[in-house]
Length: 262
Length: 302
Image 1 (cartoon, each protein chain N blue to C red):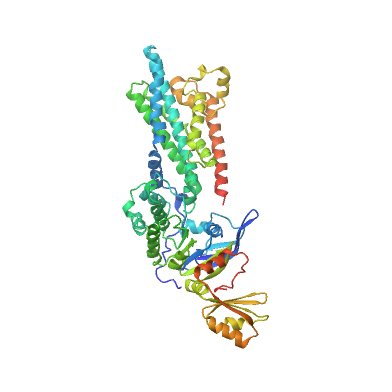
Image 2: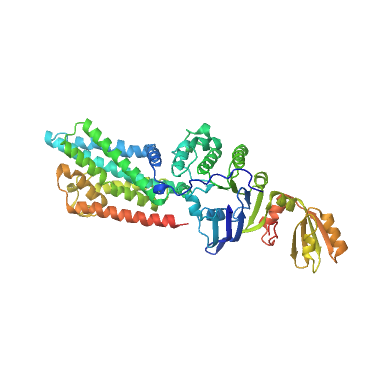
């Protein structure tokens, strides 16, 4: 029983740089996530559909007010799409854990932090697609805003959705289930309501308005619309920061529990 | 350097001991079958070799490295039994993704070819048969050109043709000199593809030898006599004796030539109640792995 022939080469073996983080994997990951029709529906079709539905509610208003409502609704829907996109990006972790893909990855040099970094970038890509597609639909259908308002509201809607990338990761590490988004979806709809996404907050009962201030979507909605309507408060900004920290911390705890379970 | 060096490996889950004081050394280039019934501790042992489970006691070294370092360096790869694939990837994308994680990956086209799945490269994983998915797992394991390949019951649930194709691919690869260890509960797989068989039962190794030795052990005869103080060394020295076992006043000798052993007992000792019986591989396997009251054999590799 002697080793007969070639022993596979041992040259240049060693840990992969950046813990295995690389552009090829990231590209494949994004392409794969975009194959999911359900995800595409919620980040592209759904926000545009609601944009058309809600903007027509200002149909008989004066021209200036109609323009304002259309822009307001468009930004809200972009925020919503980005929120669903980033959450579902992070939540793919749940699917990958339930299918044993995470376990398979542990047999490769991919380091956990590199995996999480790729998940965050995938999530943010989905968020960007949501914002861009909603804004494109808005622009084509005649939404008017100053160029810098387009830019600022778009960038803010996108960047503030980072809070939901963290939320998605938390969900992903918390529940190893393939159908996790079916449970998270309704929860997001409730959060969106408290973020003034479907109905302006000031049209909610006072009790709900007070409660909304403490929910994750509150700050995102206000900050993203601020370049159009003003009204960015320290509370709103603080809300985004605090919730991002809370969700990131939770995701990190769950992630540690997950990777330590050897 | 040893390809696998397991020292006194023990894994407990609460009150249950899944693996008990298991030691195993495998030389580079060996093809080892890890044979045992379900629940014998094969998968737990493999999980510890891959760093997926932490030993309660004992140590694991893969080419002198810890499992984590061996994985980071691409020294070890595994084909797991189920799971570990994403349905939305194509076969080729799955391999590309895996390849991108290694410093020195083999070309994707090469491993697809060697796993025999070039023809289905663009197929979605979710549309592949069980056998095709298993060959995809094999392709993923080949990406780092590992020096040690571990297969955990790789053909479970495959039809006959799938099993044959899969082992064909493995056999072609093994001729390159890679160390291979596969867990199985199919005797014929161990017999056909391994050059060494390690039998495991209830978390312990009960027999360990070349396939020929294990077959001798199984296909030979069993001589049982009643004798109070046997000269065990003298019995072992008889040609064809595989092992000698003492149980109280009984001496049990597994051997290939029972006549010589019987003659020795009848002419040179005070042995009585002599019994000679034959056994086949299946019976030996059952006896070695299923019966908890059977004591451990002094194996061919003491």
